[in-house]
Length: 398
Ligand SMILES: *Cc1c(COP(=O)(O)O)cnc(C)c1O
Image 1 (cartoon, rainbow, N blue to C red):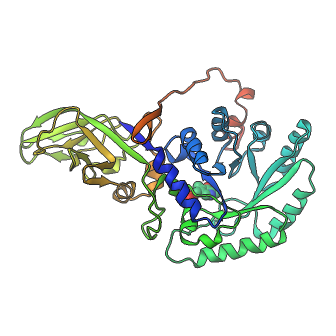
Image 2 (cartoon, rainbow, N blue to C red; image 1 turned 90 degrees about the horizontal axis):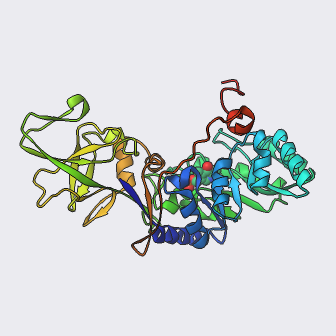
Image 3 (cartoon, helix red, strand yellow; image 1 turned 60 degrees about the horizontal axis):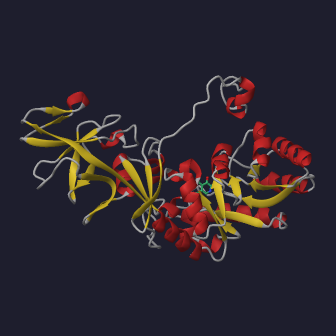
């Protein structure tokens, strides 16, 4: 199995989203390996297409981009352990700060380096997940402003239900955010919009927007109008590696959940839940072979799955099987897969595992690829593992 990432589609999506943003800057959200698409290639393509900044969730994600030579501003959008302050500064990542501890740790490191660190403040206006309470935010912001070596560059919040038809809660959160922003009117970059907000409430774009899913060509929910011609960026493909003829009554895969009711031609694909093909597609999903939808039969295994190719004309070993994407007149979208599995497109995309090679295309031709290469560091002493262990069982209360 492999993934094809259409960088032209990605660039087009960035341009479309930018055109919707009322002149606001664009932060391309590339967390979680760019929603499974591969963060380095996506970050480069998004920046080339007009994105101004990048958004990630953890320091490692930022470091990966820096190591690839990316110099654009990178916001770490959520909680970072205080033990990571030095790495944040040394990698020139922009931290989100919601505590005095973290602010002081950053100021200390920045002081030692003789530099000023830009930071963003997160206000929790109703997701009730992470951030300063709106009643504390202004005081905290003013305290931060007076702290040496810290520059409060941004102020942001995140919406709980912007992808739903009823916008009243989003408007409420927005109102709360603006009441904080008014008190901190010297902060230059205010940002609130995820993909759903940018698409449906573009007048809320303020100084910057933070689209994630839209860049990858998907809509956050079924309820949303398809208001921009976003193009799907990712296709997932495999090949038929063998064909087996089964007699009526014979069964397929673990648990014998599928039984042939007629002489059946079963094709094997080297792709399973270990690659990110959801187990929930067992006896439910389909793939495209020779331009036709063919059913996944039996239980999806970790590394393989089987499809019923009975009656497909000229079907042969080595035929391409499309799991997500187009083949001929047919298409299987991420949305369709997510709906079938009772999940959201975000989870399907993020679930595509590191084992799946990513092939990057420009004008239909492969221009680069990323495969599974991971360095294992053995004998890591506690001190060296540092912040990883700071979050883990040896140092925490878990
Ligand atoms: C993930 C994330 C986004 C992007 O959300 P989409 O729905 O994918 O556009 C924006 N802001 C924050 C803080 C996020 O965590």
